[in-house]
Amino acid sequence: MPLLVSGIVLAGGRATRFGADKLAQDYRGQPLLHHAVHRLAEVCDEVIVVRAPGVDGTGLPPGVRTVNDSTEGEGPLSGLHTGLLAAVRADAVVVAGGDMPDLRPPVLREMLRVLEEAQVDAVSLADGDRPRPLPCALRTWPAADMTHTLLHTGRRRLRDLLDASRLAVIDEATWTALDPDRRTLFDVDEPGDLNR
Image (cartoon, rainbow, N blue to C red):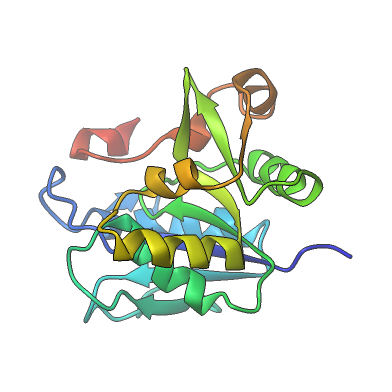
């Protein structure tokens, strides 16, 4: 039986390097955030966008669920925990940043395939000699439990979750065969990145 999969888009960061609400900026004719939502919708049964406290969910594509992080400035692991709790019915989640507009669905599907077939709780992509924290695929409940534990010990980074999980890393040769231009790892940090 295939996995029930939720997409989680982390969209609660402050974008301090960008200097404005980067997720609302135009990228190829749409708000930047919409691109990550659309790519995850191609491979997931639902998409959940995690926003900062007090930020509403208006202006998103139809059918997208929005949840708000419970606290401001607690880092991406806290946002992920909020998203995982919203995805309680899903067997697995695919997690991406709202500033990742060029995710490639074949790569995301390969991550889900590995997650389903391997005895692991998390899957990420190799980038040089390290696994990248985003995008990643996670088994929902093991990730929620581990994230809860890490947050209570003061950990805030997504990499902390990968380090604490049974992790499979898809080697560069495998995933770049599906995405030769490596666009799945592209994220927008500065205004000039919108033109890349």
